[in-house]
Structure formats: C-alpha cells, structure tokens
Length: 94
Image 1 (cartoon, rainbow, N blue to C red):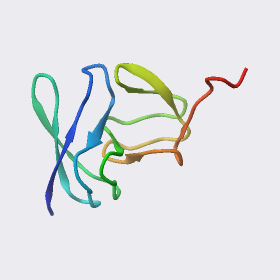
Image 2 (image 1 turned 90 degrees about the vertical axis):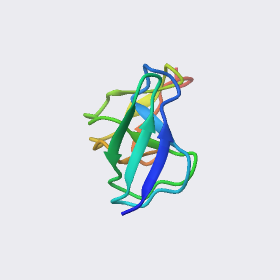
Image 3 (image 1 turned 135 degrees about the horizontal axis):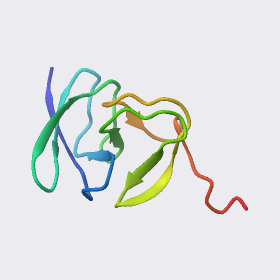
Image 4 (image 1 turned 135 degrees about the vertical axis):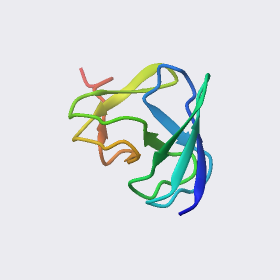
C-alpha cells in the first residue's frame, strides 16, 4: 500500500484532486484548509482526477471549487474515482 496525496480545493468541496496517480488500496492523505485526513482509494485514480471524500447517493451534488459541477449518477463510495462514468450535469440542457 502506497501513500498518495490529494487536495481539497475549497472547504465546501466533497471531492479532492489527486496530486499523483493513485492505485486502489492506496492510503490517500487529503490536505484540507484546516487538517489532513486519510482515505483509502477504492479505485485507480489518475493524477488530476477527483476522489470522493464521502459516500454519495444517486443524484447528490458533487462540489468542486465550492460550486456544484454535477450530480452523482449512481452511488459513489468514499475513496472512489469521480468522473464522467458516474457523474452527470444538467447545465445547458434546457
């Protein structure tokens, strides 16, 4: 098991950004504004991609940069890769 790092960009974010490639099973140290938390990666995550900081039920808002960037398509476990396969966005679809 490796140690990897990620950063929570805004304190309202419920995802963090991987600062290196992460393998499933790695311990990820997430740097927040006030502390460092540890989470175990549930899937491989490429550098620059998002990791879930908490459990998502379907249709839960995904917050990055302090703003909603989409919603969870399905349940997403804490430590799982958050990307196009499990996120959808309704902006601009009116």
